[in-house]
Image (cartoon, rainbow, N blue to C red):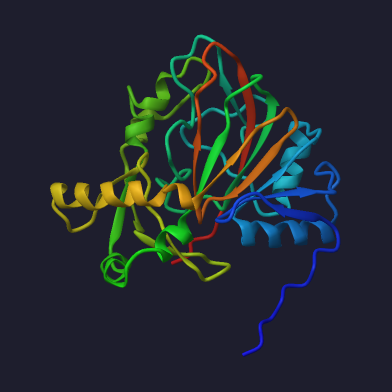
Length: 285
């Protein structure tokens, strides 16, 4: 059977950064996106799951305009956006903070009925060292499982809630620099398949994460905890990951339907400021 090769990129340069996921894209100014360039960025995004850009100069308005090339922008239900643009979140870690926002492996907003397509994070101010972000490919994590485990997981439903992070006293509500809201509604539980089919590529991937997945429907708590504990660990094995070193003006855009990520906090006593927007997604099941 003949192998069909992908057509070369004509408007951008795409350089993979790791074997499992991630690619750095050069030759593009995100403040002036052209239709042909956006089409190729989306293709690279689907192929590599997370794409990176450097040396960008993006105002909040320009970042939002770029994000809207991929869909409507979402407003976080529990984190305050900026006064000018509710869709834009300033993610700030101050030198005196004891922890950072986004620390620990997670998939964004799986507590929503309709989780986001992806996020676009722009580095405004970075420490001289540390503060890298890790990403993990959830397609690769699922595909490496045994056939028996896949059969078990394919019919299961995960229970997700924002409560552990955003209810009163939750982890993310203790940040000194971030402003949260609506804590009274954070304990709501939603259902998503443990194995999610990507709506654009058709590939299956794990869809559970330590931050927001609180159980598996129909299982006793001890059964659920045992299975989820294995999946949380397996999903972020080193072989499925890549690591991005930030510089001021860098951009990361990740597919929330196929990726977990982890913002490292190894720069205590220093300031870090990032600006995030999210692109709304469509329900894939």
